[in-house]
Length: 233
Image (cartoon, rainbow, N blue to C red):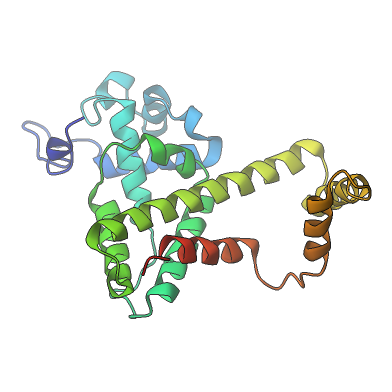
């Protein structure tokens, strides 16, 4: 996949009859299919059926599924809700950007699994990246460190969302609510931690029981990530 050829020519006019579909329309259908049925359901045949085209005709717009995935990732990247300019409070801006990433990945549950396979950065993804680097500019990190920080933070968000989604799927499969499963897990851990075999676990459970729970787990972990990634400043 040649990114230099992929993005500048994404909507290059073709000779002959006007195209029946735009690449954006095809990509939107692929995104809707992935949202509804998962990334595994996205095949060239399935997407062609959704737009009412033959499978082979779809290849004249998108050469393969790998390229379609690149377009899907970039299209949803355009849904990031970001201010025009950073506020100057880089920690607050970075937290807000990470929260927006989380919201985007939860709206598109296939996205965390798709990101590691991405081979290029399209225009929407580049806009997000440029904003993130601008956010981190006042942090005192050099350019490479800013890029690495945002990359690692995005990986954290994707990992956390994947865990959240997996836990939610587990509750559905078990036919129990999330609270019921958490309470059952807590009872089990408390029972095994009463002896001397797991003293560190007992200490952690005691601390957890005293936590008022006002702060969301994601925000708590996010703050630790930001502190760790920028500790050299």
